[in-house]
Image (cartoon, rainbow, N blue to C red; front, side, top):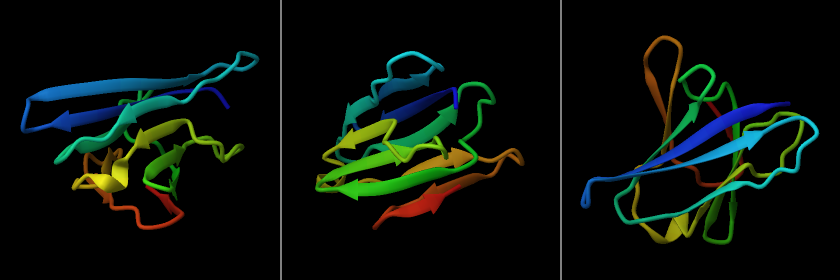
Length: 113
């Protein structure tokens, strides 16, 4: 499955907006998008083709890191938020086609959105 998913991390305390893209193209080598968590950050997932949240995401915990897989054919993480569980945060949001935002505060392996 080909995709271009962006993880956005907004840090209100500093005004920073950090973005990283996970782009998967058939037949090409893939490397996950990796960002390091920060206190108070807000995270959102954006499918760059639709400008909405992905239809589905598998969110798992690995130690203190949060792993996100959006490829239903492969549960390998396409997005990694390092040290996610070491920093207070508001979870992850994604926008649905109806304009509503859905929030996930992952505690264990779960399917979301």
